[in-house]
Image (tube, rainbow over all chains, first blue to last red; front, side, top):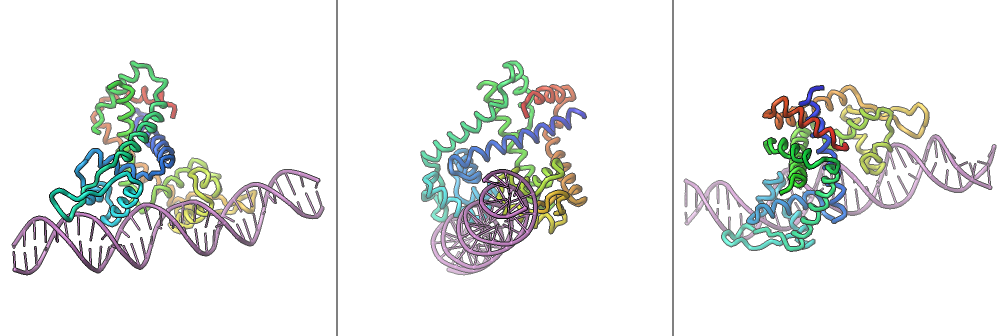
Length: 136
Length: 136
DNA sequence: CATATACTGTTTAGTTACTATACAATATAA
DNA sequence: TTATATTGTATAGTAACTAAACAGTATATG
């Protein structure tokens, strides 16, 4: 089989393996994928309002209201009045939310790193340089 | 940052990109992720019974009953009497199910291959050889 | 062999995470 | 000023799941 197809297949296998890791890690922290993605999005985009979350994940505003209810109940985010618009809410990640997403990302990364234990430093460098060419 | 961390991050990015592709492709074919995974599993494991699907995906037997109801209603799989055990059901993928999962995999692969269009033949070969060292 | 135990699949009631819709409050455009 | 759009919420309904109970069948054990 040609290399293009083999790399494509290997990418699918990486995706599947990492999806499994992700779904293994999250329940230990009593958090759902969408909750984790939301916290990550809010950390990257700190001035977001609820409708930004809806747009990012293709959810209705109603679904986001309920998602934020759950996140706020678990003290992972807080709704704050928006400094400019009184109809918007500024959504902020709490310290607990920050610590939680750090822990999860850390454990997730550790799992991924176990895939790479048998690579030499030189192989890792080559792999890094090649993967840097990806348009993502 | 060291190469190990950079490769780990890139693997996460690949997983996220491919997860997005996957969730983009499926709705066009009116099929859910678990339906697609089940068909793929049954094609790899042709003599499976319902409880095998439950074990593979961590579902209850009741959930599998309903999943198979849906798959059978869409003519993607068929429940057949088991040749040996009268309490089991042999689950077979139909021709329609086979064609559907081929189409989806094909479109999914095409999306992944677009990530690789800028690689030279030589780079693809190097990447393939490096990825072959992964324990997956 | 007989019967207790385990396995397989289904049904049903309840849960969770979503949508669609309607609504209220606020902001923007005409 | 007033019509229109935006933002968030509430509510009813849906899809995909679990837990539990059940029926039928297979297996283990005395």
